[in-house]
Length: 113
Length: 115
Image (tube, rainbow over all chains, first blue to last red; front, side):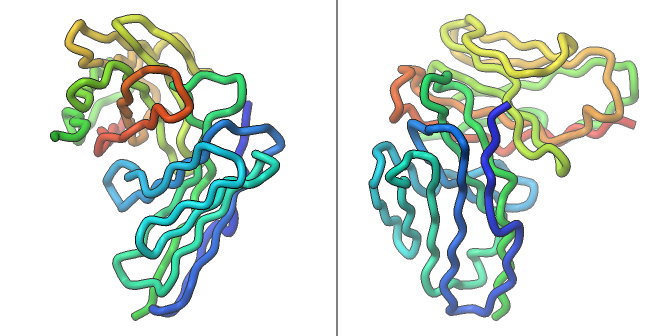
């Protein structure tokens, strides 16, 4: 099936540092979404991207839809302890069903105060 | 506006039993998708329901089934439970338009443990 390669798998950073993570695929995607999941909870939508080249911010978070439509990145600036969690990229494959999101394996972020 | 709700939040079952999980979508949303999340496989798509009809299905055995009611609430059923069915089951709702901006919003999940 379709796969998204998300990296890095985990990050351990100091509070105040910037964070960058990305997702790549061999398939073209129509949309790219970034979710954050806290332990025992469902994923919460952070940023949605709908057009190739689109750059969108949500507070300290910035994400971009790659121009090739096969990748996306998420940056977090000036990390704080509440940024801890697992970040997932997800998307809809071009020509696929909108009801079926493909997910990356996640990036586990740990922030040291 | 209330978010996606799932009940129960936690379940413990034994092998061979069956289980039914419930999901209430965001008001006005007509599409409900179900996902299974495990440490090894990550988040995997089970199926999607729209207007009481299954619109899309993932690669899971027939023991996994679902349905949707006229009020858009959805249930999923797993029969003859196996140890490997232990997972967090997530449902997500969206308007269901099928357009690229039709974003999915997730519930908190049901943690199923099979002993």
